[in-house]
Every structure is written in C-alpha cells, then in structure tokens.
Length: 205
Image (tube, rainbow, N blue to C red; front, side, top):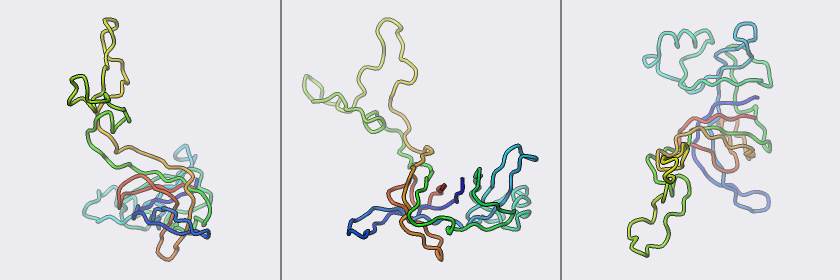
C-alpha cells in the first residue's frame, strides 16, 4: 500500500462546515526519497524503500553512505519499506504529500509514549483493592491475589502485573484526512496519533 514517512508536529483543532470543533493532528509528511526498489528477481518480494529526514554524514557509516549515494541523495535518519505501492517509482524519485487527498482515510503507525514502570491500575486498568476500610490504609492500588492454591503453587504465565508501559508500536486506523498543505508538506488528520512531538510516524493509505 502507498504511504509516506512523517514527523508528528502536534495537535490542534479545526471547525467543520457545521461549526463542530474537531481535534486533529498535524504531521509533516515527506518528502521521501526512493532509496531502493525491491524486486522478486533479486529480493524475493516487491517493495519500495523510502528515506526521510536528512542525516549528518559524519554520523553515518560508509555502507549507509554508499547505499544512499546510489539513489543520488544524502544519508537519511529514517528508512521504511512499503509493499504494494500504488504507483511505479524509480530509484531516486521524490514522493511528497500530494499522494494523499482530503477526505480519504489513512492508517498512522508510531511508537507510543513511554510511561516507565507502572502499577496494575495504570497499566491494565485494575480497580484496586477498593475502600480503605478493614485495616487497609495503603492497599488502594494493589493488584490483589496473583498466585494459585496449593496446586499448582505457582503464578501462571501471562498474569497481568506491574511493569514497563508504553514505548510500543501502535497503529491507529481509519483517520480521515482533513487538510493537505502541499507547499509545506503538512497533513492534518482527524484525532490523535501515537508518539510524542517530533517522533517519526508511518502514514499508509
């Protein structure tokens, strides 16, 4: 499917024709350079490799510099492959935000915000022990019983417990494109997308 690599700028809101206030996210989508064309004969599958966001040469390996040199471009920070691209592209072609149209729906993928080590109430939505009565003065957010009885005398695998939260790949589907600002490479989509400001996102049609 066709798509682009972008950067999350932040959130704002727009008014529609009925005067309703719509929350939306602004994404800097592209321009992306075709850095490699995967073919069935060579790679065993067909895909387009796109590069986004220029990278300083001194922070790149010689292998990476040689790879991007074949495409006639500088080193890129983010590289993603897209299978079944709608249009045929050649090595070194530039793809910008004009591939999207206002009113269509897109999927946006990114890495969610990291929350660090969290308890079961925040991580899994547990209700906690409940009221602070019957001698419970500090157990409101505790997980409660986790083990089994004398048999099998262990905690089952997959038990929901406290742990690191966030920092995972998340895809939000069917976000409507509200506005395309071609001269500034901006894409405005309805709703929120995963990740913090300035994080990379992948937009797919």
